[in-house]
Image (cartoon, rainbow, N blue to C red; front, side, top):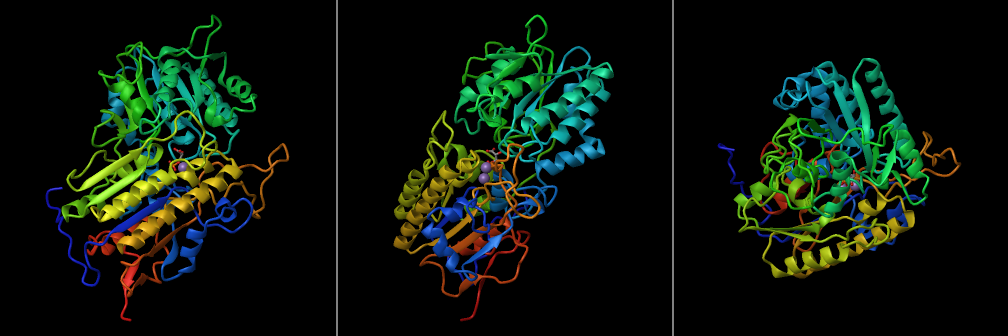
Length: 557
Ligand SMILES: O=C(O)[C@H](O)COP(=O)(O)O
Ligand SMILES: [Mn+2]
Ligand SMILES: [Mn+2]
């Protein structure tokens, strides 16, 4: 930005050059203590001790709904909006909301992206690929429904939907209902003379929606079904497919194997071919970037695409502002500018960021406003620890927490960096599996990682800031209105695999924290966006004037 005053004013009362560890516990919310709160059940002495510092050194902040730019207070937080807010220090209307607005006003159809794909409607098929649920984290069913209606009213004559079943942002087993709803909509379209069908499907974690290049096989499985029309399972309709494949007790919605829908001659009904249009209807970037690359890049060596159809492709949003990927999109993404990371490099603050693959982009890409790469490689180092591949994380609930903490410790002790920023993934990634016992182990491992980092900070006389991006492991059961566990049709509790609406803790401390610094007692509505100004202050600078207010104050002792 041309006129940005990058130089930050020095904070009058807090010195510069502190070593600050900034830890984001992924999916770690605050909730009442009971057996479904895995954080409570787990041994977490480090986090428990931090809480004892309340309210001067520990408080809760909002991590869901409008506090992080989501459409409503019913929207649970997620990593994208959470890390965006943490890094950018302001609240931006997020993808979910921007798409709602564009659909409601009809502006989505006047944009460059829609005009571009529309050119294929006369002779080609419109393919819609994305996550089929109302989770509101990556996509929303009602947005898909509006898009189907809007496209068909504007000339799409042949439509194929390639579904990815959820069970991660919504209850496991809910996929059947979503597919039934979509089938009904498509049959209504058929009654109007539009040739509309589901063409392929698969569970989001096994088909297509990998992230940060952890496992290209996931994308390949999707490619084979969506583009080539090939899959190990063939069905005549998608409701039957999902029901049948779920009969295997090992298969959950997230992991449904790839299937294609075939006609009476056993031929796939909707491979993607030259001249077609494709829209990936997820608004969230991380789990669409890999498919976007496969659909768009001429040069591509991640797997053998066999065929690379000449298509008109648009994303629901632009997924990566730096890579300009995809080149065409239906809705412009939030313009998250002037993030704290960018300010800090302009002021000579040296940063180290680290997580394992599945969360690496959270503390880099999302943190920096959905921007890949460094601001200034001289001053920043980003380290990715390879995640385990091909397993569900309840099998290895400790994940790479200790390795991440080791790297952070090394970075802290090296005294080369002012900010050491990490994401500890366990409570989130294992919480999503719905395995309560494994999630308890995960929370314990995360707590141990925090301890290692705090110990290192003690050694160098630094400061720590421990927080989280949204809830998950603190609530592992769906509840009825009176707060009791809700029972499913089978009389069993319904395990909650998704995030929650709960607030998250923030704790500050360490020998470098000046004695006269404490958390303010006002700002009851504060959320994740207030963390950036807090951290900038702890680095010894005033935060930019338009950042959400800092959570700390210096008082006269
Ligand atoms: O993508 C996922 O894994 C979930 O939909 C959301 O989890 P995250 O927001 O913590 O990444
Ligand atoms: Mn998260
Ligand atoms: Mn999550």
